[in-house]
Length: 372
Image (tube, rainbow, N blue to C red):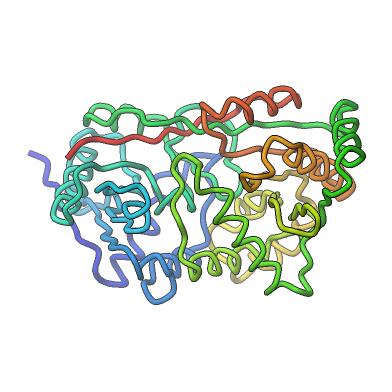
């Protein structure tokens, strides 16, 4: 009988083993993008990641005959459960060999730990929440993921389903490639600006970053609360996310909409820095930094990572202005490939817009749950 051992990650050595397992599992996958090991170490550092201030996290490894063959995180999310008034537990960082026995032990170990935290269901994969990377890739394995999106082997889906996990929601990634703005979008953008003189859209002002972050956080709290899967962020979490994105943000592609000078919405498009990460193999040194600087200006792909409008100004065309300005400025800066992600499968309005713009779904991510 094969010997399987559960390891509760406690030491720095075990944490590095947890972080480096995907490097072995995906070494022959040309589409996998290695995360920076230093960033991962900081993410799992309870003194650096504000998530640990409100929720509990436990990482697990599975060893088979002494070799590490699987990993998983089990974590609570106090912010989620307070907001939604439920007792969900979560799993993430789910990676393993193609072995049902290993999958069973990983998921049962996470489930047992969450049951001890008084959770009544387990949902995932979330790394750690909808504010982070989430979803299991179930369609679109033939292309690398865009920045801050996940990637996994195709066999993961079967392993999860065989353990009694059922689909909760699909998340779509829409892909678009174009060297010019559609005429109808130009007319929409210019028409809204002419019709609504109180509307204005501007790019991020990095010289007044503290004030800008306040504005964006205020909009975030108002605009996202009604969204499916919304998880409130502590201010510290929001600030940490901003700090992590600042090195890769192009200010011209972060848009803030105002109505009569009052914040009404914001939109963020990020250059697809996965194009650079693929060349760095998880390390900044000795040559990664030079590669990053060299390839920085060679990125031609964008990911529209988030877009939202506060309730009182929805359905008045502000989202159309965001598409208009993202396309217009993006082309001026040399970007001609864009991914809109992720979009909920039942967000009919956003899916209809993406299709009308000429985009197509090139990846589908799935979220699952199971009663404990």
